[in-house]
Length: 428
Image (cartoon, rainbow, N blue to C red):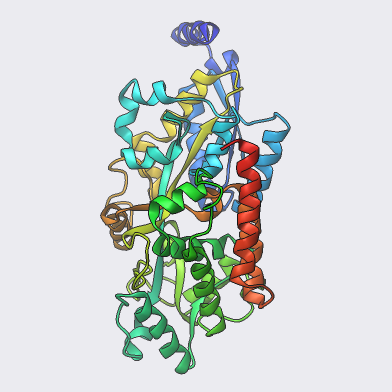
């Protein structure tokens, strides 16, 4: 790090005499994220170029891998000790696993020791903490909402559901009218996990659910609350009652989304960061759709004010040889100027304070952020908040439920068995 400061002085001196700073390039940072789509790379590629131009002592070697393959790739890299200097991470257990195992750098002092902290609401930082230390910074904040086709709702005399029972009744009314109620693609079963995680949050007391996910519940009560089985049963019933399109296990989420945007389905459970997909040239247009949180379940033991969602962000490898430069890069990406560009170009919702405005975001995106602010909290994505092995059991079980080849009781028994084994290994 002393060498880094010396190099900075040399570069400044060279620039004063008209020499190119590129000749003094000192370090290369590897940077891995999960947004390879052209509309997202349209932000990241210029951002990297801008950072390199302003920091000629640093070069960024960027790689982007799509959402689902990313989970496998980052785990392989972690296991092979080839951790990128800066890498994407979901919050919750997914990120905590890196912190717990010494793979992520403690950046508490870097964030809280200066003005960087002012860039973020505390609620967006909290999910990246482990044992009181901060190991990541958020790039966006997200939540799940049920989007609906206003015309199909109006044509069938359906209002925005106030309760889960109203929501189910709306599905049945649409089905009876010959309309597929909900577009759903579960080829990658993270899509099912968002439904199940939302239902868990509504049916299981919050403190019980969090202790179970963190594997800190006593062994004799771990995952024994009946709300978990009820959540799987309610999810299965949506399928069995014809609320979802047929063959959901064979469809990707993006294909299902295309069906909803084309007006073939009345609803779809989508993320706030997907609102930009509902463009003026879709069948819905800019004003032909609305959204609502999945409504509360009568008698549910959970917190009806929770939304399913989370901040996404970046971590720094604990083994990086260039922590100062990596921190400089993340400060750049999460600056107010870059955050506003990120929102405008990608359509995603940045977690940086003041970055989402009417100048760069749709009215619906701004309303979605207000809904997040009004929620009692976020129930983090189930597939990144539970331990990985228990998650695999649950995700496989979700597909089996849709195929009619498994039962909620049997799935939860396997989840509990797996979670107990992981809990014992960790010594919790």
